[in-house]
Every structure is written in structure tokens, then in C-alpha cells.
Image (tube, rainbow, N blue to C red; front, side, top):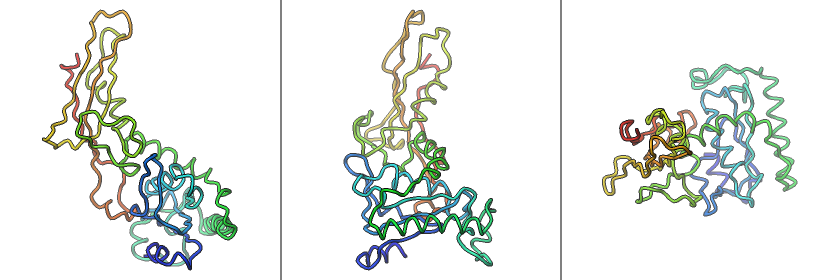
Length: 279
């Protein structure tokens, strides 16, 4: 509600601070060069905690990707993100927690006074930037360290929260389109080689190209392939080039974008060649 109000009254509002909340997904899009653009004119500081039971830290990682890591240069610094290590949803308040917080929040690892001191310091930095119209000095160094494992996991998954899947008609998706995701790096690196098994000749290796498609599509049908062969006695390195098909499946309630539900794929549906075919 505050985001919609601020956007509608951007001529009156200089900045916005979100505590245990994030800029919603419908406020941004992906540019042709692959960077993130926010259709949102109000500078916004996003504050969260790693122990927040109502806004998952993984949702903070998604915000960090779009608002900091992948932001277009013209908007750099306008939407900083700070994640308090050990901070909970209750870390932003005092007194008796509301029932939703009492039932869903995690136990903070920092006490209330510490949390308030750290968070207020970040607010002061942000307010100074807004007043001075200089968004180049805010540092997210500590947050980058906290969120890096989650960002790495999202990248390896090929998270649709970062960019949409390419879903092309051809079996092989575009390799040079920065606006969409070609396939799952996890599947590209591991699944087909694991299913294929080891070879007696260590010179033979599986080199897989994973592609995102809707696995239930029938027109056209996207099926895995093996496009090369290797002699079992080959003396030099030889690659079995394979293509696999993947589709990430996400929690339905995550579409509400409240931050309470998991944002990672609950399943990566995959079509791969059998061990018999590979061997």
C-alpha cells in the first residue's frame, strides 16, 4: 500500500524506507541489455533480516540482485538493500509482537537495542543520500557477503525470479539473449553426466547444454538428444554433446509476492537421456 501511494505521489515524497518488506516484482522489468529497470521514481531503502520469519532472507537476495547487482546504470544507488545478520521481523519494533509476528517470526540473534542502532544508522545514511541527491556512496558490502550464498544458489538454479526463461520454439534456446535464461546451470553441469555414469575411458566426457522449456509442450515436443559419439578406445579428450530440457516449478503462493513463501524451485522438471543411451 505504501509503495502504491508513494509512486502515485512521487512529486511529494523524497524517499521511502521499507522494513521487513521489499519493492514488489511488478515495479521492475528487464532491459534489452539484460539489466533491471524500475518503473518507480521514489528512492527506496530496503531493510531485512536473516532471521525474519515473515519476509524470507531469500526474497531479500532477489531484491539485492535486481536493485543492486543487476540495476541499470542510470538508477544505480537509488534502491539500496541492507540485510541485518541475525535480525528478525521483530527487530524493527518494540513491545508486544502482533499475533502474525508471534506465530511466524524466528528468534533474533541480535538484541533489540543493537538492531535498532544498526538499522537507524542505515536509515541515516540513506536519508543523507536522498537529501544530497547523491546515491553513489551507500555501501552494501556487508549485505553482499551475507546474501552471496543465496545469490549463488539462485544463479545455479536458473531462478525465474532473476530473469524469465527463454522458452523458445527451437530445442536450443538463444545463447546471446540477455533478457531471458537459456537453461539451468545446475542441470547443465550435473544431471546428464550423473545419469550417464562413468566411462572406463576417462578421455570421454559429457558436455551438456540445458534448455528451459515447458516440459508438457507437445507442439513442438522438446526432447533430450545426444549429438556426437566417441570411440571407446579414443586416446584424446572426446565430448559427448548432449541437450537436456528443464522447467523450474515454484510455490504457487509465491505469486502473491509477500516474501513469506519459498522463492526457490521446489522441483526442476528435467528430460535427460538414459544411462543406456549415453553408454
